[in-house]
Structure formats: C-alpha cells, structure tokens
Length: 462
Ligand SMILES: [Zn+2]
Image (cartoon, rainbow, N blue to C red; front, side, top):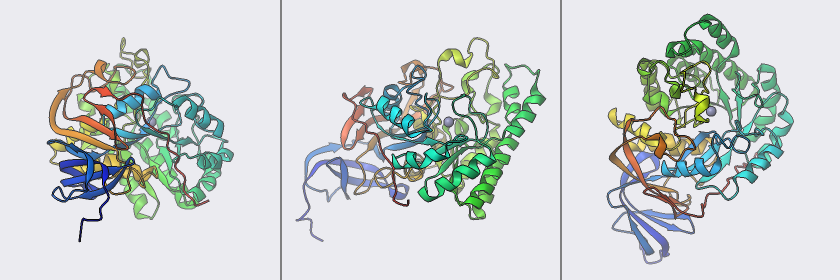
C-alpha cells in the first residue's frame, strides 16, 4: 500500500483513544473534509492535512444521538425550546436529537404541524434535529405525508399522554394506522402502558397520601407495561409493523420484549438514564423531580435493565428529556399525583449513564454504542450519524471520562433548573464538540451562530 496518492484533508484529529465502530477503542488519526470523515488511520500513518487538532488525552467519540427529546416548541416554549434544548444537547455531547411529536402545540400529527415545527426551529439549532411524527386516533391519512416530508418514524401512546392534543390510541386505531406505516418501514415508537391496568391501580391507591413515592409507584404497576407490550406485539405480528418500545422501566417488560423478539416480531426497545441511575428505595417522599411514567422502580429493576442492555434485549439509551415550568413539578407541596411527570436530563444523560456503567466495569465503547450507533439506526440516520468511519458526518465529542463534577441544575442549559440529579457526583465531562467538523461547543462556550440543521429521514421503500 502506498500513501502517496492520499488527498489532503481540511482537518486531522489525533486521538490516543477513539471510539470506533463496534465500540473498539484505539489510537486513530481522523481525517475530515467538507464536514465529513474522510479517513480513519493509524496515528503514525495520518492523511496529509491543512490543520491538526490533538485530542490531548481526551477520548474522541462519535456524537451522541438522543432519539427521545420533548422540545415543546412551538406552543409550550416556556417549558423548553429549540435554542435551549440544542444548547444543552451540545454541552452533553449530543450532536443529533430527534424531537417527539408532543408536547408542542400543534402536536406533530399533520404535515402542516410538521411545517410549523420546522419553521419555529429554523436558525436556532446548536445541533442537528430530526422529527418523529405522531399517530393519534383518526390521523392515519396524514402518515404518508409526514413520511414524505422526512419524519424518522412515528410515536403513539397506549395510555393518556398528559396533554389533550395528543390523545392515546387503542387497538382499532392501530389497525388503521399500521397498514399505512408498513410500506414506509419506519418504526412505530410506543409508550407502552395500558389504561385498563392503570385505572385499576389508580382505584387501589385512591385516598393514599399523594406525597408518598410509593403512592405514585403503586399507581403505575409493571403489569400495565407488560400488557401493553403484549398487545402491541400481537398487532405488529399481525400487521407486519416495526415497533420500538420507549422508556422500558421494569424487569417483566424486558422479558415480554425478549419473548416477542423470539417469535420473530420486529421489536426494539430503549431505557433511560434515570431508570439506570435511581431506584425507588432511595427516592424521598415529596421529591417530585423524580416523577416520570412509567415510574422509577425498585433496585432489582434497575439491575435488570443493565443486564438487558448488556444482553442486547434493550437496544439503546435515550433521555426522554421532558421538562416543564418548575411550578408544574409541585415542589411546594410535593404532590406526586398532581405533579407533571417528566425528567429533564438532555445535558446529563451521557455522564449519568457513563458514571453507572463505569461503576459496573462496563467499557465506554458499549455506552457509545447504546447512545450513538444504536439510536442512529433506530432513526434511520446511520448513513451519516453514529460512528467514526469514512463517509459519516464529522460529529465528534472530546470527552474526559475520569473528570468528576457535581450537578447544579441552575448551571445547566435546560430552560429550567429542576432535575433529580441535583447535587449528584458524576464522572465524565464533555470538553469539546465538533458538528460536521466545525466547533459547536467548547468548555462552557457555544459557537455563534448555531450551525445545527434539520434532518429529513426518507427511505425509498414506498
Ligand atoms: Zn417521552
């Protein structure tokens, strides 16, 4: 092999430790031109370059892809918005996020609503953003148009979503929607809790103290997850759909997913940093920043989620970043039953997961797979995102895996400071982020103007 014909690249990144495809960590010289990775070679055999950036002891990872983010703009921009969410994402090493179709107003359930969302995002993105469309009762005629205009897939709820403009679907609604989705080969993301089980549990806790965490936990039993996964898996089997279960929180749900996969159903699943970090035994009564649905369950569930990630039953980790104004968290009276259910963690997800992974002896390469390569595949973005390989966008994170720091909500770039991670010691700090080869974030500073783009995901199966 001769190196004599190799083209000069714009930028060469020298890293003693780079996370390469498959989670392999080794020294690499990463050549970047025109915003894309052009070469990955040994440090002593680099491409000729106009500029060199030395990672100086930091690990270089592919930019993270967070497929579960509620940005809430337009319509509820006081909860969170594109500018604040994407700035927080950059500081957390997330270079691509996929926005959920709810809690914005309008919800992304029609072509016009998608256009409104794209218009509101224009010019304010610090990182790249793609969009999920929504499936609600009666919008099956809109799904093809949403696909044509570039949504990465679709999201539905089997139980009330918490906002009135995004009603949940039942079996008959999915029987109408799934045939429209099948030709697109896009995934249907499912919030899997079943109303029947939730209503039964709610009746059983009626009158119980609303400040007690156990009251909230008992009102969202594991059986609601299991029954919902069973229902949607049976529908997917019959209709030939590809489904993805969001925010898996319990051990029995994992077993149900494994059983469905063993039957040949196209099913993938995620869990979230908070389910991998916290456990019910340690959540104080009245501590509503920990409220989310499904709830954070007991310690044994947390450990089952880790085991399922390692075994491949769970495919990926996404934050389910779902903030709200502090007043809606009911911090004054600690009422779990009345507080908004949602945890804001877009900026914290990666160090939170890495902290727990490291404590369990799990390598950084595995975490990168769960938070970059696998979510890029879910969203159909793996042609340009999720790995350090020639042809990929040069979205790169320079990470210090040993740095220790303490979370202060008020210093995060989330719109609101409320977080259950307040005061927690975390390992690992994002020092620098490149988006398509250009600086986007460095040590608490964001590059202006923001250079994030809206991504359209379109396959050619229709
Ligand atoms: Zn969500």
